[in-house]
Image (cartoon, rainbow over all chains, first blue to last red):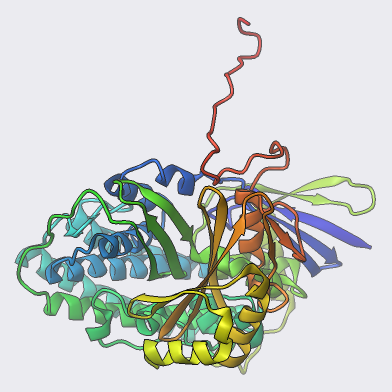
Length: 400
Length: 157
């Protein structure tokens, strides 16, 4: 007998409302189907009616976690269309905020991964540290979520020596704490055993299904736009592309942990080598008819904007592809042949955004169409019970 | 591999199929093919030049026709293949047999522009709601949103 379990459209494991239908055989997922559009806001259509400047703030509101990545991707594309070169100090500050955002997004995601695996201490530790990053972002931009620091031709705010010192001090604290927590992770074999081997995505599948970001890098594909197609000042900043070979949730944790360390190094480099000079130049109000493809490595993967101008002060077409959409086909493969109890963990592994509300999941009997309501906490309890039943894999090494 | 090397390789690989080729910026190459040659081009790009990652597919409404851009990426190269189909008969071949990861972008195109992707493995709507009125394609330039008049239940007519 087969059951179909709808997950979503409203679900705590996903930031965007999305409907997934799981076909189950016992506890094992045999098929997954995806349906989008529950929160389609028509931003691409709206962007055609706004001016170039207004669209910065519109694109910033595409995502609530990586808000800076969309506005930066848009701004760097429009600057190319307008043939404006932002000053070097402006560029450094723009990508300083970008790296801080990556740190905050990865810390958030690590906490979520710990929470879904039943390791709530990890969740509380990483989220406490996330506050430190949010405070740094507030020092720089005045805002914690939508930083609104980009403008055409540079950034809107400068930082002084005192702010710089404060940021470097907080960074030392973050680095020390992160290293300590990852040691804790290493000494917690049940956490490693819970995430090892879950949500397997082979390298071939990841390539064929065009996965991006940490999901692809965890399947041993060294695909990072910062290295492959350097934008801003990334060509002159030393850093490494982080990959893992295990192709599972453990690999995705490893990639993000390594990237955190790389991001701390990049932030330190940017602050210590911050050039002098202005932070912005004047940009024209119109752009000549042209087109540009702008790429950006957001915390969750490659972000791509196709922008076409027609000579007026409004874009002819703005096409936005966020990394999560690129990872959905791969998620279906990850879910297949997994356990229903692993759904929250696998979901969380591609998408670091979780609203913590308690929502419900309906369980439909495939034959009678009868529905049963399951809460997310019940699913989580299932996940933890399944772990208790399985003996810990003693030989799984912590990769640090 | 520099852009000029890649353009040479493209010209030897695809020959007459490339109609216009441009290299407006570093690591950005745009070229146009006829819709009939699209699937062969994508297959050749994947097999000979290792362009197996489709970043996205963009549609643009040009008035009388639709322009479709396939954005390919690989390390140190980014390639955009464009093709144009008439609005009166908007049919384009699916590239999913070659690149399975393109399925969501093609379904998005169908929803938003009302063009027909032939031989698509899964033609169901992806973004528009189940009760979306037929013949409404939001990203066409002549489509305008009109908010339906608000009806308050039990209120005055």
